[in-house]
Image (cartoon, rainbow over all chains, first blue to last red; front, side, top):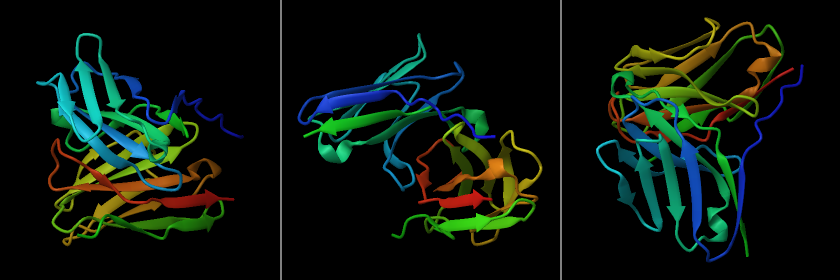
Length: 113
Length: 113
């Protein structure tokens, strides 16, 4: 039968505002985390990663925060632009799992001009 | 440097058929992982290959299989296709089978009728 699609959380922001996308990860043993951006019709694109020995990492216009106590990850995008509109996924990995990534359900970011 | 390439980009098959998808990793990358993306289940890990050996496997039936060649190119095969196998199949590559950035290809869109 027809499968029910995941209801993606949606975040709508005004161009120029800051965006914060949140993610709750599943496994307390995970020690490597990545944020990906996926535009329609494309594969996921790497944005930024962070290891469990850090709680904050900054890139160009993006910052990732990691709170291991509550198993929470966030991605902050400064001065959001229309080109940032996409679905954003967090992914987790455990050291003994090689390259296996466990993905969150994703958040759809919509930027209004 | 060329990115991860996947062929074909689109494919239509009927139930019961089999299909083979191909992935060429970024030059120098030796780890290739495969993921299935559907609206209902999101992004799910299929398997990972490193130096022609399967290193990790997700929770998919035995109809899903893969292999890796000495040049690191990888193929995945799905036998006895079912309607529910309709999905975007993504390949990702990294240098090693460890916690490092995985780069995704554009995916192969498979439709099973």
